[in-house]
Image 1: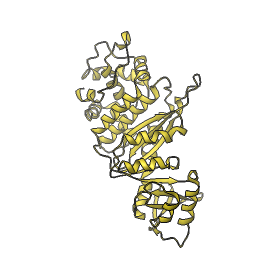
Image 2: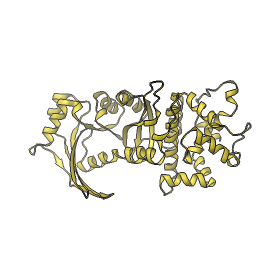
Image 3: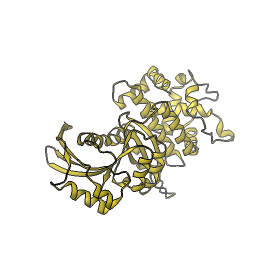
Image 4: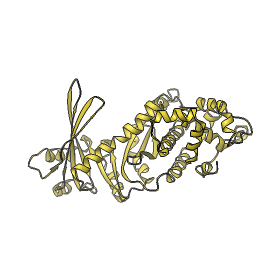
Length: 364
């Protein structure tokens, strides 16, 4: 418990009077245990506390019994989101001292977090995913996808980017974001689409011209889940003319990835274009672009399909944001455990095997 409490230094208990019947840190510990066992919200936390009271008394005092679901709901609605986010960053500091490799930036909407009565839109969480570590490195919330552009700079400030390559979709292919990544010592590989009108057109014309001085790697073929995908990467570094015309911060190369996807029913093709701040080889460029999809496959898909995040109906106050951070912590703990097995299987094992749950808690 001492190490667990250290994670929450600087986090103020927002409850007053009779509402503070139960110990603040004990409530957080029970909530974390419930999420590690597959719990989805305050009702599940209350049920977990009742059913696992003998186990919880092994390391908690529970002087006033176990908290009810209303206690969990009230606490997470009132908890300061900035303080809770800062606590997550301290928690992550013990897991990964330095970001390495590819850091993918992407957003996800919590679909059931809207509140029609108050006109509250669904919460939009923007996360930084360490593709090599397979950990959530940081996150920040915004109330609309249109505000993601303003949220990403704040997210980047939370990270040490030296030695990393930051990837992002076309929405975040912005001059200010590119400049910030370079200023923080990182490199970028930003998807380029029509939102950067003339720059996009110039890059497409240049890379699609057979006479351009570009290097193309051997195609990479992967077969999985009933489909065959062939990816061919091309990189060009002879872009002095492009820098002269567009003055894009830190631009050192441009690249494209041509994807050919074959399934039993049809064949589709797609070409994606990118801005690069480092003269990557086509092979490395292909790896970096492929790594970016880890944020979808290993984070967002798990949150939706395994942890059922989109069906969580927490809507009031700061509840949706704080519970989303708690789920990120749970994913990181499961990943840090290192034992083989699916995430769903680990959640089930934690709920059935108290010794395994205790081992997960020791990672704090």
